[in-house]
Length: 237
Length: 244
Image (cartoon, rainbow over all chains, first blue to last red):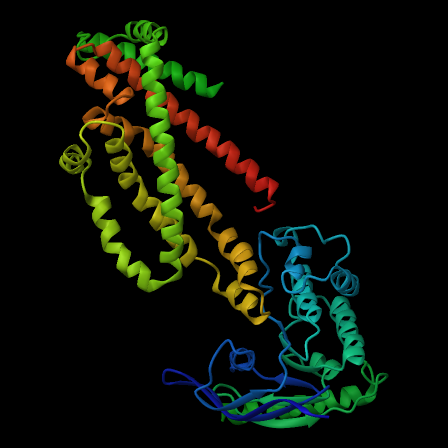
């Protein structure tokens, strides 16, 4: 199992404004790391640096793969192209596009323009596009915010299915502990801005335990909640 | 139906003003102008002039759109090119039409080239600046997305840049069409060899006021009709391409 991403003492400033404060993090092949932190703590900036859209101020970020999928926080679809063409622009492979459309539940919507889709549907196209390129690292920036619970769970299952098949690495940002536990095998807790890594929880839940009513699931959830709460009290004091 | 009422209103207002002014040298009655118009429509001379104005206008539209879109595109893409060309275009935009006259008359004399050059210069800056602002307004987030997914340059050009500027280009051409007839007629009036503008100049020479108004009506109709036709065509094209 090799490293696909190595982050060492990463710091990012916008002018005098410190956003990311000395992160070190390794992402292994097939690993699923979830970053859990308050809004505006620099998670999106971190993704932008990893994907090469932004440069760090200090430290190093090395990626050892070249195919990156990115589920953006907002769908970023070409408004003048249909769902199908929005997918086709990143990979011109009819068979794979049809497969992904089926998997993410977009059948019947292929020929619609984004303006005709609901927020949740657009987000599904965003997810489908990121999976279509068969990424070696999948970055997901609060991907499920606009989706209802059923769709959220079914897409998490689909991503798991694809993950089992292709064994890619996942980095996800969220502030929902349940989502973090459903998907991640490591949960990284971040502080408020300037963001530091406070703690890392290893999640070794089996498939059956990844259930919001499961005892171990609930235990882990309360353990993480307690930690987050204790940290925020510290901030308040 | 409402439009017809609007036109009737114009005619009534015209009758009223002609009556109040009481001089057909200043404002002849609509029926005098109409009579003159019908007379002109039965002479071959009128159609030669009309055709001369039309082809000049089409060339001006083509040149200003072609150069304007390409230059506007480059200026939108690169701030350096924008800063280099901006002063020149601002200057061209500010030069009064009459100031071009000396230049054109000494260079080419009276003829078709003068109206085309001057009119193109008058229309061009707006097309350039509108196209450039279209490029500058492209959603940066979409550009990041295509960059991240390593979409090829030709696809980015077609699916992002071209698609984004189409509404701006259409708006620019619409404005051009609205102005081009007026500018071409003025330049023909001043330095044209032939065309409706030259006919206007002759009508003025002979103090044939109804003829001046008749030609003006033709110019107004041409302006409105071309704008309408362009709007219908551009809407059909956008629908066909499923753009908006």
